Length: 505
Image (tube, rainbow, N blue to C red; front, side, top):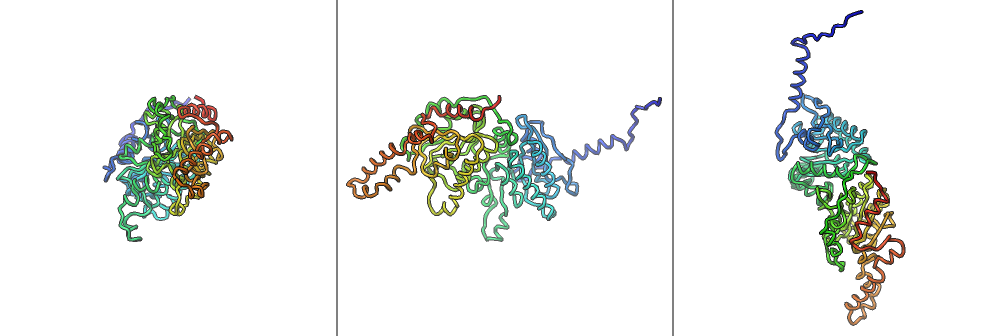
């Protein structure tokens, strides 16, 4: 029998020890820290490591180059967030200012395909000057590939974009194709054309912040959904957002132990809403008395300063994540307009995709009238709300808190659009129009001829309110499931969700 020699021979000066030294040197070169420029506080790799659970980040293709021994311009990999895998693509502004070249795009697409194929959320940390000019058509082709996978991912996994620096030109389209975008104040800008091109093309003299800063996009355009002060706050907000979501479409909900609503808020609930419909109140006080107590960041309002007459919020009820849509009387009386319609329809569609129940709290005077709103396409945008509620596949529960008039009543998740359960508080009003407008239309001759038209109008409005607008007519017709007291709302919602969407603990 032949004897096998198992002795380890000396690798010699050109053996394995040299190879180990070469690998160590390459790793050191790739991992060498380049001090962040401008307002940036962390490198691309540090951002990825800070986002995931401590010590859990695993980098993919760390030795990939894009010529001249430079890195690919993006750090990709995965890590754990609250114990579950999340894929990360973090732009490296230290390499060609984060410009998207062919190799950069291939790396991002590798991360996207991993997330889609394995059913994990993906977070994009954007800090890019746009497509790399030197790569020409290859850069544009790569950008298109990223957008393609953004769209493919949109119906399968959560996608969150963080803007921690410039996000210019073609690079700006990717965040717009993701679910939610978070921007850092005075550090992040997102635009198709920067100040120099705008000045040359139009003569307009505007700064990068004025064209595409966080204020512009979280208040005016609605392109971004949260404005934060620091990079750390952006990373934390993304983690909070993911805490409400399953890892993928049809994934298991993220359950926590149920927490009752705050006692003080529950005690105030019957007294929060003024009887007179023209007096404003803060809808957050209503939500505080119904939803799980907002401890440990268990509520996250999205687009709080864009179309602020409506609230869109992720929260918890009975320990399970829910989407909340509500009018906000404190801001423009809670009225609907074109921007509010888009804000709500986008949110309802998102909640439906990830099987988050939609709780709708209604106090709406109608749609904002006028040539400006008609010019903004309020009819078309309002119709997107109707479509979103009709197509929603997650449970939809609606509560009329005070008033619901005209087409806006329908648009705010009415039974006719497919709401699973609907209730109204005992002091609420549901009608084609408010008592004042209805009386002015129905009794205009009597009011014209009256000795005291103001007294007559008030008398007729009170009769209309009690005989036509009160919710009992809707309840008697089966359009509402019940008329309830404010303090009964939480129990009704909890019981309905346990029946409509039971979860296995």
